[in-house]
View 1 (spheres, rainbow, N blue to C red):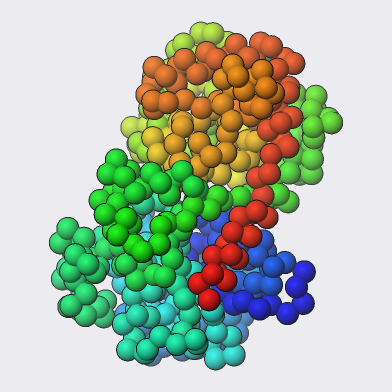
View 2 (cartoon, rainbow, N blue to C red):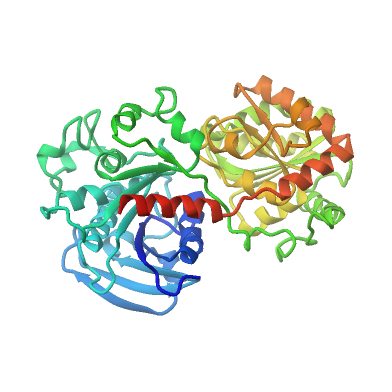
Length: 487
């Protein structure tokens, strides 16, 4: 551990685990400070103070007050909690709302989200320009569209760039979410009219928060090398491929990792029976417990697949249901945890009713149950139509729960397909399929079923999967190299 940090980084994000989490972005933002600390990086997190966050924070002290932050008073609070140094934006008029940080009880986006996340970006820019006084970042690292205006506000501050002005980075966690709002909000957001051009923040007649970050940041990263290439193409560029290709420096793809302490089958208190590569037989007890929990037949010979996901079109969940009759008919079982699109939720509950003892469904999200599913299943399904990185396949590798993934984004970068050559070379760690359609997924499920009936091959794949480096160490080195290169 470095005794004296030589690099200050402000991570700006709408959520951060363990304070609040709706998806993988929170895991990344929560894990990076600890991963970077040994290299001498003092990373602190700036995020809104939602009600759910209030329940989780430790001791606090005020560091700055705003008389008017987009329509009301606000206080910036410093807190050390759960191993994190965090700055929290206490602005009740913007963030004191129950439930999901982004949508109301009706499932619709909060109508003032443009102001709420402009406030996050505005405070980030002010930090960069010296708001905290005794702690000033060398790098302001924005995550996703909610922090996309940070670099723009800093650039528009009127101050000339100097050695004291921080460099800016934005990480794209999912290009599909861009933060698009009507042009009429330009003045309310404090954005000059001359920025509303195709070379600026304008995106097909709207204000583009993410586009602003791509235009004004010094560096752009995303969460896997393959996704960094995919988003520069018309097929997956979501209308921003031209912007990304016009940048002087290419997008940097740095794989996400997982917290190896949180996700450790040898010491996981949430699961029925801890296990490791040397005690792999104990995984069977977790399988039995999972079958019991979901009301599945207690069959050790069934290939038990799990699916832990948001239920959306992007995730390819519909493809699984198309293949389900064949998979169940050949000896498979499915345990599903997730929520999202109502039509997909209905497919999931109907499948559980129609395949009693073979399919189990839990609509919602339960962190403890996700641990039990990773430990108990033989295989985890991730058939995403696109996937910037993915974390559940990394957890699957760690738990010897072989990932079956679509060949896209970070899924392609992290799973070695069990084709004939890889099996013979003893290199395979899971299964990939492409093109991403139900027919090819069905064929791949058949391949998995065939290898599952060859226990020695399957066990070898499990052990190789569990030996993969899925932590943050290598990625932390890449982030440090990026930061130091900017400076």
